[in-house]
Length: 97
Image (cartoon, rainbow, N blue to C red; front, top):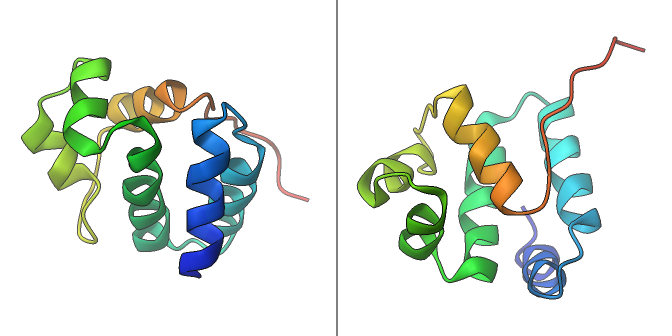
């Protein structure tokens, strides 16, 4: 994923604008690229003080969130939903086009 794009997304998240983040994550999800989604969320966590601070805000063990957002992470759906919600987004299911 493009580092400049992620830097812009983090800056926008700091300003409480999650629109670019949703676009980046939706594209990664559309490509079924779990590693890209998790790595993007890790980068985006910087807008909220980093993985440890975000975990504390979400009530998730920081070590667990660190593992969840690693390239080989496999977060629980409850953690994934909490992360998105903490960043001002939500998980949404829709029919295939």
